[in-house]
Amino acid sequence: MYTRCRVCAGKVREFLDLGNQPTANGFLLPEEVDRERTFRLAVGVCDECAMVQSIEDVAPGVRYHSGYAYHASGSAGHRQYFARQAQRMLATELAGRSPFIVEIGCNDGVLLEHVAAAGVRHLGVEPSTAVAELARRKGVQVVTEFFDERTAAAIRAGHGPADVIFGANTVCHIARIDSLMRGVAELLTPGGVFIFEEPYLGTVIEGRAFDQIYDEHDFYFSVTSVHAMAQRFGFDLVDAEHTPLHGGEIRYTLARAGTRTPRPAVAHLLRDEQVRRLSAPETLDRFGTHVRRVRDDLVTLLRDIRDRGERVVGYGAPGKCSTVTNYCGIGTELVPFVCDSTPAKQGRLVPGSHIPVRAPEAFADPYPDYALLFAWNHADEIMAKEQRFQQSGGRWIRYVPEVRVD
Ligand code: SAH
Ligand code: TMP
Ligand code: ZN
Image 1 (cartoon, rainbow, N blue to C red):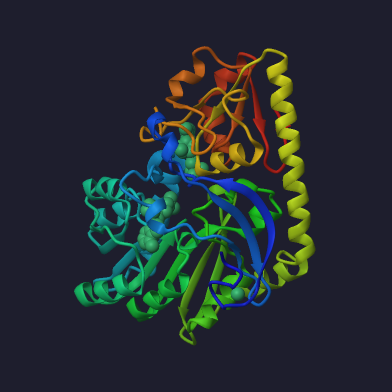
Image 2 (cartoon, rainbow, N blue to C red):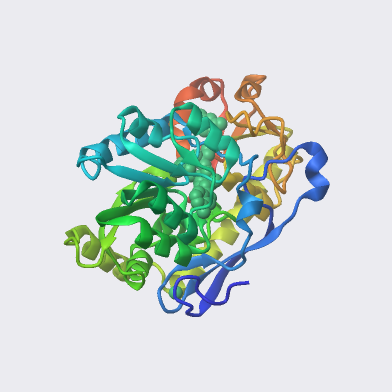
């Protein structure tokens, strides 16, 4: 249990407990149900550096392994987004002579496939072997390791220093962030940059996206907390910009202290978070009250629908779906199954709540009265694809930022 901050050893104050939860991407076969483990899912804020973080630790090997079910390329929106990010880095930080980029958590190669196609030196660091293999099939160079100071030193010894170290939706997954930061310091060229984009605390707290809280997320970054962390490890936060994935993230750029002039956006966003009192105790406590209300509203709605004899099907089985179903106590009696396009999840059960996952074809066979949109961050893509559902009288249920039926 963490009562001390993983970044600065300050005191961590717990502000929300979402109960006992399984690992959110541990989709199970029916015969594996007895072996499922759970952990207390609670989050707190550091008094000293404002880093919001999980209270309990789940060993990385329990979360990331051969069967890790998240495939980043599963969404057209994500594929397009990372293709653009790759092109942008190729045109800027990777435009010099013989540049080298290391990606922490390259998953199925959604970003690096474009770097590989451009013939630029790269290395993905990806411990989950099955997704790493998918990346290799796209021509991406991958080592199946956890990134830390030891792997960073080995990469430097074998390949030389990196001009860019990149991570998306991965840096906040690494509890030993001190080791990660020392690894980055070891591996980066003197003028290089560490760029990472991760779920934003503002989206979780102000956008009420409480389902972003699950075991994989050890940290919920803000510009304030990343700024403090950068300084502690000898870096400056030189840029910060809002990006659209997962309901709203921030892309942070760190450079060695004193090597680059921070863009005005950094000071602006820092001030803005202070004015909004983003990590103040009263803001975080208010969030807890709101989350409990959403839970009550959602369960009441689903029970009413069931009592009227109408059907609900879940749409999308992201990690977030584990948080919501387990926290709210939603099982097959309220949501008999959920459809998801990821083959690795189909035929399995949502962790903890054990709702079966079926292929998207099951959605229209026949259409339910309501669809509970767990993959709400892909709402535009999904609703465009499923127009016939609404045309045939079906209605979408959302619960972020509050319960709403469309
Ligand atoms: N970058 C992709 C994938 C994010 S999922 C995207 O933005 O969609 C997070 C990935 O990080 C998983 O594939 C997981 O296996 C990997 N991962 C977890 N811990 C890691 C570590 N210490 N080093 C490198 N990768 C890690
Ligand atoms: P994510 O929110 O972590 O990106 O996960 C989204 C989940 O939703 C993932 O398991 C894939 C699934 N999904 C569908 O089933 N259909 C879709 O059209 C999209 C975009 C995602
Ligand atoms: Zn701290």
